[in-house]
Image (cartoon, one colour):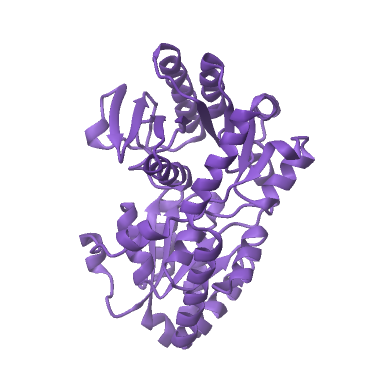
Length: 413
């Protein structure tokens, strides 16, 4: 089977969509299938295209047996709504043009969302070859943006909703990453027999191999004797990362000996990074360090080296979002401290692999961190339980096999 994936994000970019289909693609190639990807030039999350890719409008490369076709995207480090919108639009157009002109022969198309407009070139590719479209939904847009207050334009909301519902209707299969998203789409009118839950998960064998790598030089400035409390991911508004800094400030004032024994390590980039750095400096938090974006192997190594892993989300109206980093965090065998509610909190509580705090509640987060810092053996046991849980339920190799089965059904139907 030849599988065509349309996904704006792809390694060396970090993040859920790139990791999800890169891992799936490698698994499918290993099983004897051919995988091709239409994607953009890397620029997420800082809006900067790396030097090896700059000045190009098209490139074909092969990554772990996967044919990767990169088409033009507008990228800007300003990270404004306009620049992001132009990025979505230009990739939509360049990917669609490539699909019209290319001679690829494939048996099924997977298109990813958000944004839902990425489904349009996927739909074009499916119609061109008269093959099934699989619409993979990681977050329900535009609904999630409307609920968060990030999108208020009624006309744009209406256009995106019409595109979204059209894609649900025309897709042969709609895949989602949580049970809550499946239930929500059924409420929206998507037939239950068209939906399949295929979690994000983690490739445990790959995690174990990559996490043994030596940490890059950027980590040399950290306190090697400290108990690292690590956040790794995007620094955007939805993560509500200020709660980590406010909890660090409380820990310094309430339990200075525990604060001195720990180091808060935040790895990544995003629109909120500068504001977070200013807050760190304003609060004079000398035990908080910011590190730039790191390769996946370095992130995995940092997670395994940590004392505990921080995962945060702002209080939100939708309760079915599960950050993909939760699965890599389980794999690290370190305890997770979660500042979020909803389905992700239910998963963490079921696993026994961490502690749940109320979203945005710095006092709760501070108290939870203090409890773990005081009891290292308990923290180790919590981490072991999380590793066991993800191995049993969320190994990405098994999920990749399930994805193949679901695609086979769509092709047969």
